[in-house]
Image (cartoon, rainbow, N blue to C red):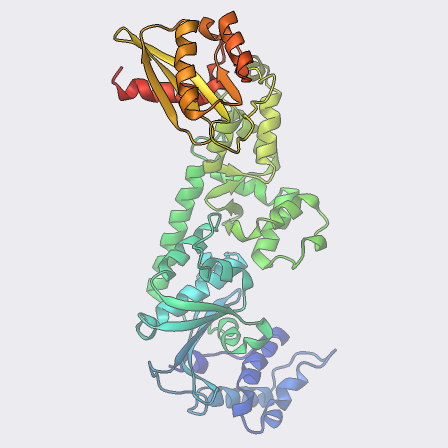
Length: 485
């Protein structure tokens, strides 16, 4: 329970001392005479003073370690009390605590845990290291957490949208974080953000790591396995590209924009995009939560970010066979990425003469919908179906209610059509508008006279464009299929 505290080495610089003070201040109300105990360490923080770890500093440091490992700050595990898990990461290790919130509101630790990072894990981006710390904490305290509700504390706010969202894991989540989020689905927890300055209990465990203690074998194996999986994903993203993974690695660090992005991913992004002066780097800022590093490359989800010198080569490969804009975008979505890739694809295809020659002519006019009707039988669409087994069928469809009248007839002349419509209108009323195609029965003088006498506005559709009378055409098609024709 207290091994992580007892093995804690002395700070090597001012940053380590400040981190140690974070833990001391966190438990300060439990420590009597704290100002006297910490005096030698306070001297190290004075401006302009050379950092010298004296015997007095070591004595003060050891005294605080004894206090942190004593019964004063520890309590026994009780599943009936509220459980709080805190996890933090540094560039060298991860630290975690499991605590109870007691009825009087005080918080006492049940167990401390920490471990050094493997060489591969030390190359992780800051979000990945923070995510690793959370996974380490939950798996380390698995027996005390599984099946119970607990509070999960982190000082890395972006992880709340990945590990704490009720909407599920965001689609474009960095590969490692996505895998860890799936593992955490097994647990019932609420993620809470705690500012770094109030997170000393976990921060100290992640920073002051005994480097002589190697990571446990299980963690080393898990780290190697995960890196091999991600490497296979990275290689797979270039499987059909005229590039090798090694080429991307070599040129990512020499690329003016990607080298800056890589440093931001490793060390943390600014709070605002306005701080960044390079507009190309700003475009990556908007997607920062989906970016991660692998070896010396950058990945966006499962897609490899391509240096600028090789983007034209990728566009050439994506354009093989002239698949068109949408198909090129769909292929790129599975393999490669850079912020302007969609715009570059559009520009590339528009500049291709072969694509332009084979492209469909754009519509001269955009399709227009029929005006909305507000009452039944205001506009009626008519059309003939047939002949079917020697007979034809006149279909009349009400645009408002979609009610359809079907009348069987052996003749489709103007006289026969007028007779059928007169019977329908006598029962259902005269429509304001009648829509039909350009069949001879609808364009004859007799039919025009019939509409004129009854005050009907007769509208015919454009020749060779039956979709203009789609209301009736759809019912004609349904009617044909229904009777098995």
